[in-house]
Image (cartoon, rainbow, N blue to C red; front, side, top):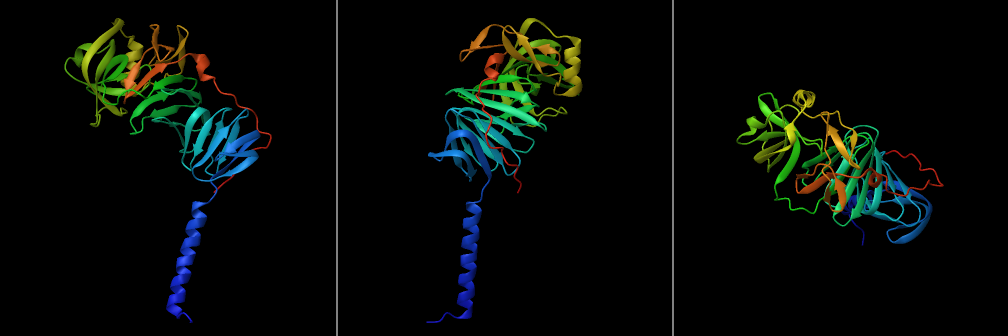
Amino acid sequence: MYLNLKTRVSLSLVLAVSVTGLTASSASIGVATANGNFQVNSSQVRGSSTLMEGTVIETGGASSQVQMNNGAHVRVAAGSRVKIYEGRVILEKGVGELDSSTAYQVEAHSLRISNAGPDTVARVWISSPNRVIVSALKGPVRVTNAAGFLVANIAAGGALSFDPAVSATGPTKVTGCLASKDDKFVVTAESTNVTWEVRGAGVEKEVGKHVEITGASDSGSPTSKGVLQVINASAFKRVGNGGCSSKAAAAIAAGGMATAGGTAAAAGGTAAAVGGVAAAAAGATVAGVTVATVAVVGGVVVAGTAAGLAATGTFTPSATPVPKTSR
């Protein structure tokens, strides 16, 4: 029996759409190479492999390099496992390194790590089931939680330890120099380099003081220029002699978010030097890591970490150059 013209046209359109959808779903998003064997979706591969959306890469004794079609470059250390997507990579085990100027991010537990500037290199290490260490090897790195709440800004050369297993309903705790800006009160957290607008009774009495602030994160919009988040303070505790240098207070008040940045060695640890004030190591320990100033932000414990931990990860050169691909 012959099909009429209308039916044949309809069938042709259905087939065309089906083929187009199949091609789109199986399109390559990048390529992985290694100087040795590695696993792709649980199958042993040697040399190189084309990547599709959701491809799982697991390395053995050699590291792997991933070149995404969008320009992002991901290095997967020996003994690590990642799941690759077009716009993100999920680090499930071990160490991963992101070298990218594009909007690409690494997910590790509930954390989201991305570049905060061009030509950034970020290294991420799942050191234990409840701890993630992030290093900014080159350029600034931004860390948020799964809800998009800014947890930390890491300056080039800095490293922070994160424990995302803390309850997100717990209090927020930050330490820094409280300053007055645009008739508002702000503090830049020493350990996270994030500036907060501070609200609450008695806050004006703490201006110019080095304080630990405990309170609740506020979903409301801050009114201070350059400030992204608000904390409603319930308690203030002065740290050390309680004083701040005029230079530190002026830097915070003038810039909103201090950029003096970098890292400062403090009692064997690494602490963010914010607004000219290095976080003073108190010999505290969080999850087995000696830390300087500890912050609790968005349900995540954040602390400075020993410099040696930031350098973890075995990366071997690839025998086959990673091809530069484009869309």
